[in-house]
Amino acid sequence: MMRGSSFGYLIKEGAKNIYANRLMSFASIGTLVACMLLIGSALLFSINVNSFVGYIEEQNEVVALISDDATEQEVEDISNQLTLIDNILDFTYVSKEQAIEEQMALYGESAFLLEDFEGENNPENPLPNSFRLRIKDLSILSSTIMKLEAVEGIESVKAPTEVAEILSSIKRAVYSGGMFIVLILMAVSLVIIANTIKITVFNRRKEINIMKYVGATDGFIRLPFIVEGFLLGIISAVLAFGVLWVGYNYVLQVLAENPSAWINQIYQNTIPFQKVALQMAAWFGGGGIGIGVFGSMFFVNKYLKV
Amino acid sequence: MIEFVNVSKVYKTGTHALNNFNVSIDRGEFVFVVGPSGAGKSTFIKLLMSEEKPSSGEIYVNGQNLVRLKRRKIPYFRRTLGVVFQDFRLIPNMTVYDNVAFALRVTNVPSKEIRSRVPYILSLVGLSNKAKSLPEHLSGGEQQRVALARALVNNPSLIIADEPTGNIDPELSFEIVDLLSEINKCGTTIVMVTHEHDLVSEFNHRVITIDHGTLVSDDWNGGYR
Image (cartoon, rainbow over all chains, first blue to last red; front, top):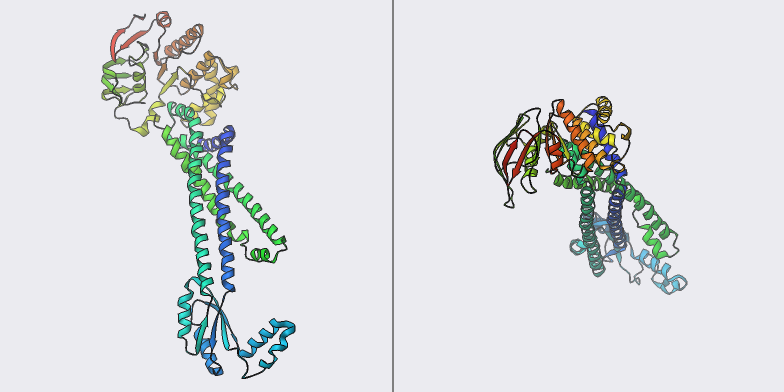
């Protein structure tokens, strides 16, 4: 129905309109970019906090103590059973001899104080044989402890249950808080963007009206607006993506150059932008284009009923 | 060409704009529509362009039954008309040329034809030298001639002019109606709503007077009652 030449004309018209209405285009792009930056920053912040909390979680060890009388075969059996428990990331066997040597290493110059306990099968050694386990998900720690206690040969389990609870609740809070903020930002963005598009279309209601009078079909009138919305959306997405990329890497660099060991720990656990770039680009692009196109269409339709 | 049969229009606000209105206009006529403000002239025009549907009655324009015309068919119907408004309604950020070409682009006319047709129409209304100007740089009379060119470019069989001289100087008004009369001589039907007594008396055309939503006089000899 529509000729190629007039389709091309409409595409060109849409692109031209962006320049012709540059003040409104600027406002639309500005709002879209600002909204995307806010949402993107909130997302990046929360995934990084999560990653860091995850790192702290991994540092927490659960220790399973084993009787002094356990034979090598029994230790082997326990180790086999541990591999069957899902929530265990990895584990190492620490004999009482290794344990005392570790302690001596910690004592440094005062290591001689522990000399009496040193040596193979030293009956004086107060430290037990043990397994040190790293846990995958601290939030289900208590059930994992129960499984450990059920393993034959394990005398008792020492676990940082309180720390685990705190960390899990931090993780939950960051996740739900982050989502909440992102949702609010999205809602606010939608309102602002909708208004910007509304004003853009309102400013051109006369033009739309004239098109109707000279016999333009609704599709013909809509297409330049759709092209315009599409272009504005994609320009905003590219800008926001670029700014976020540069800004994020800048923050990472500041963290990396900070001499504090603590900050360095944080840096070690940040998520590199490349890891989320594709997803972020898809969301920005999809969101920008979607809002641009559907927003324009929605408000243009209002003026088509002449 | 135009046939209104027992047409009534009541707006949602309760205003009775037209009551049992009947009129018949043949191909090639030039008709002035006069009457006081609020008499129903604007409603008549709106019904003529299928901008509104009548509450009752039948309307036929250019062979179309406007009461039965589907919404998505309206654009195609409007392409058989040329419309000129009091406020010109030119697109401000388009040149004179583009404003006229626009009416053709809307109807899928090939660009080659647009390039030959637009200059011809602009020369017809005497604006060849203003093709690249923006509407804001033109006088009221010139803007109305651009609007007229836009109405003409599709070669419509009917031109509807809603107070086309309302916003321009009296001496230039005469020019516009003169131009419309020339177009009429080539066979195009013209329906022009106006307030200006002088113009109506000057040109010897049929005059329809509407008051309180009904046709109160239909004078074939011209002149303003």
